Length: 139
Image (cartoon, rainbow, N blue to C red; front, side, top):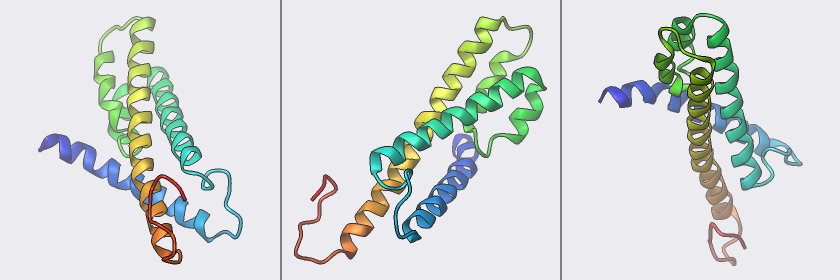
């Protein structure tokens, strides 16, 4: 239950951000680079998740771990991995932990982007005329 409480808020916040971006992209007459295809949508959000974790991880390395851990969990749920850096870690230890948490965050963003992207894709298919078959794999 504690895991659900810990990951629930950030997942909801990230999903809301993704939905807002997707809705703004859907309102434009010409879709932007990020919202024009499902694969671009997934990879861009994955890169955003990785970059967020990398930036916050380096900030935690330079600043105070406890401050980042208590304030960054809205966008970086895997910052709990920074607990491994308590004490006197070596540079290699820090880089390994930051890499693992950044990859974990990228995978979470990828999964959430897949949920949002496929949902919007299916909603767009449902709104199209009924003379086509409904498939998530293309026309």
